[in-house]
Length: 378
Image (tube, rainbow, N blue to C red):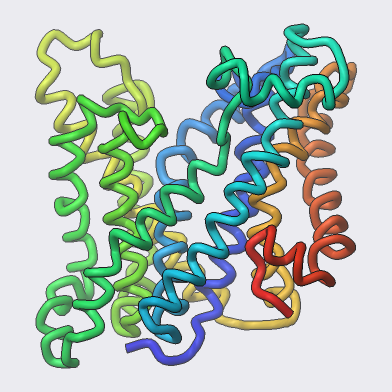
């Protein structure tokens, strides 16, 4: 059982959430997707980056969230844990829904010529014109917060049972996943993917998203379980090159066989075999990516320092504010005649800088603001 803080898990959390800025900034330079502000020139490199990273970045975020829940849960009673999760997730969600998302939608609508007027004039339309993108009401990236909160509640029974296991029972239950056995998680994740993905391809609205919801919940539980087991973390570190090989093999196979991670199955005469192979390869890619990140973090990032402590606290406000900041900056940067890569560099760098300054000046010193943005009180 892990009893001391694993700094590589903190680093992985910071890096995983930080990559979100580069991912969402890339969408400005790739056709389709949200946000709706689009650059005239597009980049095939950023397109591939989006295609590959979108397969496992969310799974990695939920895995890291499961890790965080393990450390939060072991220090609190069940009632205290639910109260703490409600504060840190639901309050920022409503702050985001009411104050963070509307300026983003407003900026997009002005850019597209669908609204002319002030933000103040636009604000009542957020709640009276229907759902985004036809209307203006949206949760945008805050869907992640809702899913995570539900995972915390749904996982309570599992957390309780795991906490009741003796050392011998735990070793017997999880011993089969030691060493290369960690890859046995792949078939456990693949079976529900086979059963659900065709009917629920992945629209994140809690109604038509049961395939992704199930996959992410299982990955979340895996993060919770692995965070508390020193031997599994050590095995993953030692197997990092094998995990990387699995990641590369699955990714290359997806492109060779299907032209990418999300193929058009209407092209195939007999869809079932192709569908089964695609699901297995995609899940293999996701799990091997998580193991690769975890393995290399365990090898090279097991050091804590003041920078990590600062960023680990700032990363949640960074998540809350990043997309709105990107969209507002994109409104001014995208129409410029600069090169695509200069725009991308300025967009990402300025987003990091502005949010960290805002966090330092307006959030970090004040407990009220810390509460609104999901940061622990001083």
